[in-house]
Image 1 (cartoon, rainbow, N blue to C red):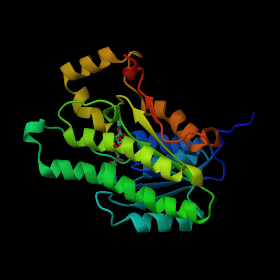
Image 2 (image 1 turned 120 degrees about the vertical axis):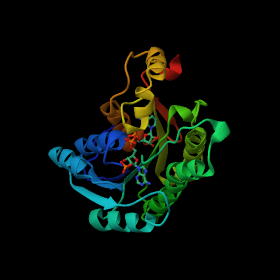
Image 3 (image 1 turned 90 degrees about the vertical axis):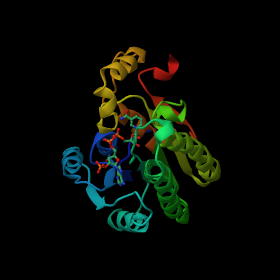
Image 4 (image 1 turned 120 degrees about the horizontal axis):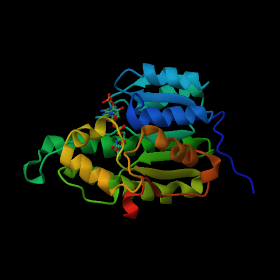
Length: 252
Ligand SMILES: NC(=O)c1ccc[n+]([C@@H]2O[C@H](COP(=O)([O-])OP(=O)(O)OC[C@H]3O[C@@H](n4cnc5c(N)ncnc54)[C@H](OP(=O)(O)O)[C@@H]3O)[C@@H](O)[C@H]2O)c1
């Protein structure tokens, strides 16, 4: 039996890599040997330093994924600097919190555009390059516990992440036989900007912590191993899964 978690010689696009889970994923892939193309709208300087410290090549592409406009450019630039895109991690995502009864169309559209629409069309654009040379690749979507559960006060987020789980399965079914593995990771409750409002609410914060069997919130570095695994040859026969990394939350 042979298997490998080594990503030497591979290039990975990671969206939203300037902070939080995206940064931790980029660093983990870099530590496993991948070259990183970091995509996002904010400065990637810190991520660049961390990836280069791990010995990786690094390139950043400024792009706002609230529309489809930058997608062609992202793929062209990533291909130009690396020769080939082997791995895509769709991590960029936003959340808006309000009661469903008062939720606005803008908060619906903004979240769906970044979390679902751009994710689909970036995956499509990258997959076209992976299919063109018939060498396949890995696509990893960052889903959520809200891919499995309802949540409260986040209607568009839950819809987007539930949709992303379905999209992961659909793309896996279409592309598995063509050598592209499409899978998702469902992070539990991690300490990032995304969960700041929850952590600042003493009631919600202690309710959440009380339900996590591991007894602590996730640290972004807790996600790296799952990303490396799904990006690596060790996952070559894994298609369409949504892998929880949640301290046991869903087991409760
Ligand atoms: N933290 C958790 O507990 C948790 C749990 C489940 C799932 N997730 C998911 O994990 C992913 C990363 O979130 P996070 O927790 O690391 O939160 P975060 O710190 O808020 O990071 C979100 C990332 O997405 C980027 N982004 C947002 N809108 C964008 C846009 N229009 N164009 C380009 N990039 C954009 C952000 O860039 P800026 O910094 O420039 O805004 C940032 O890099 C998201 O998909 C989130 O839904 C998080």
